[in-house]
Image 1 (cartoon, rainbow, N blue to C red):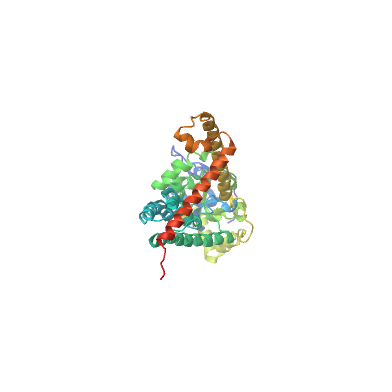
Image 2 (image 1 turned 90 degrees about the vertical axis):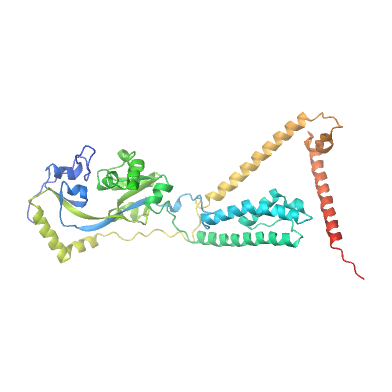
Length: 420
């Protein structure tokens, strides 16, 4: 176009947003104050900016997305419950709670010989084991009606376990990336993620001046308290969400995908697209240069030159490493190790409490009169020597053996057949 120009960068390095006092910062502010004639950059065309500047022919179109740190190698607390939906786990929990409440009375009313093996507490243990790990029981009911109930629980638990086992194998064999949220609404209601936006851009105005209650809440709770600490550059914002957990970047999609953090799969985009916008050069209101640029830009679009330039610099599709078939990291098995360590600590804690109680009770009851009823029944257990405690355990097993033998004799008597 054969003209000379002088570059005048904005002192605050901002694109241009409307400040609380009504003034504008950045390049939009420079145009509004007539400090510069033209801002030949890809400005997002907004109604608020159009009040103070003129936008020329739209160069291209785009949209905004949320970007988060790639969670591929992060700790997955729910790895072993993800194969089943939350509704399915809820139904399993209801079965574990209510089935024993019906099972224990039914077996007692059914005149079951081994009623001691199906008390309410033991019924809870049986149903919980059957519904979660397909675990059986050491005793099988004798009555037909009780056997039907028993095997129904076992069959249901086994089928659920098989479904879970098949899904967990597929989950481990085919590695998929699970995002912390799938939309802006879910981020606001189900997580405490903070939203990182580049200061001085139209994205700030998108939230700050919005009439949408959700966007207004995001600005108040997730952006405004932290925006003073945000870097001015897009690369700086990308590195912030990589280095610090709990941040989601809101930015232009086609701009962000051209940066190294996205190309190297350090950050990934949440699928939902927001706010389709146009990009255009900005001019002073009633600028004498407006019509000349309008003509030249339209001419480039008609000849296809603009499209060729955009295609030349278009970023490629993000291709992240495929972890399928590769060894699982500690993050994927973290829940299992937590369960193992928690169980061991709980076991040692119970052992310590039992040892302290036995020592204390043994010391207190060391001189109980031999004629007392407690001494006759409980003294061997709480004696202050481990040898007598062991003898008490042997006596307990002998009593249990006699009880089972007596029950078997009753069963044989009830099912005795007389032949002639």
